[in-house]
Length: 146
Image (cartoon, rainbow, N blue to C red; front, side, top):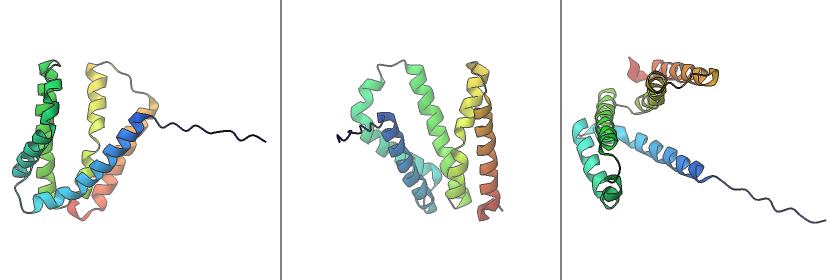
């Protein structure tokens, strides 16, 4: 009897997003420590400088794109980063803040509904409801919510 060779191919996007999830998890775990003895904006400034130096070799490729989307991504991302670290510093813990911050795709989806005329199907509506209720349950069970 001849054995069949099973060809299991993992899509490259799946590998990349799994890596991102692990890295975000590590990032989230260290945010409370980073803001414990430093001002939140100082942490953001330090992170941006270090990230900028690491990414500098790739900067020329970014500038070939249209400039306004790059500027918008940079400014909104930087402002979100600053608000996020300030929230972690104020809370003194990163677990609930990271979980709540991870619901940002809801805002993206609402903006897409309003301005890009995407449609809301029942699966997306259920996902949004579960994300909001899960965040509420997590934050109400946490000691930092009080």
